[in-house]
Amino acid sequence: MVCFKIFMVKNNIIYIYIKMPTRKYSNYYRWGNTGAKYKFTPGDAQSEAKAKAKADKQGKAVHASGWKEPTLCASCKKKM
Image (cartoon, rainbow, N blue to C red; front, side, top):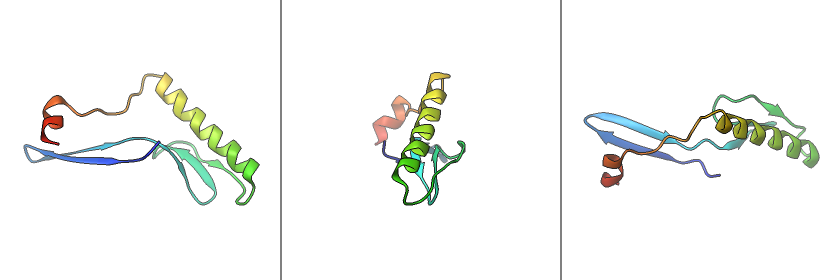
């Protein structure tokens, strides 16, 4: 999944839409901006794969609980 931002100005209000990915940091993975940190040992491919799998699993659980990616309203799409 690719992270992207769409900036939309409408009636002097800025709307920001962000797609939530699993992100890799120096020694941990995290789903989204505030998910749990799943640490791995740098250089250990097996440890890294397990950490990424746990972060991906958290993302799936969040989606299963009813969370959805923000979508653009019809009037915003027309301006793009």
